Length: 190
Ligand SMILES: [Zn+2]
Image 1: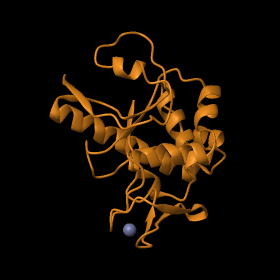
Image 2: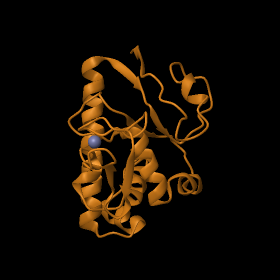
Image 3: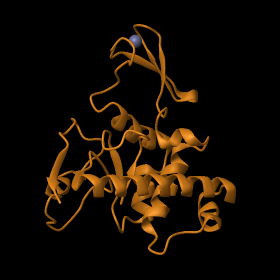
């Protein structure tokens, strides 16, 4: 199950994929804190490390409370989540990740009420999260059908994958997150 983090940039950016059967305990261990989720989004946004969109500077400082990265050279502040699905609500990344987990793991789908209960947010907020996720998952499915390609994701939440599914072998070798260096996107004809 793929989730595009980046809206309106179909096929251009990393996606997050949750392994089916990822246990809740393992999920919590890997993505249970705001810090860990930020690291995932950061690696997705800047696979080679921070780069200022204005001057290309690589040195930065973080304004943690506001989720901003400030370029040390030109002082421009860049939001970590601008342009991502996470910018659509004020919910912490940690809860977005939990929502992604529950939405992708439940076979019959999950109601907004149940999602809200599990996340500890209102049903209205849960509904917004759920609909945003459904929307981006649908868009991704549609774009895959259109291009007839299967993208292998740079960001693969869940880590280990056993079995030798064709085209996914590179994922089986990925044991840690974030990856030590960016990998080229790979694709194959469907
Ligand atoms: Zn700069």
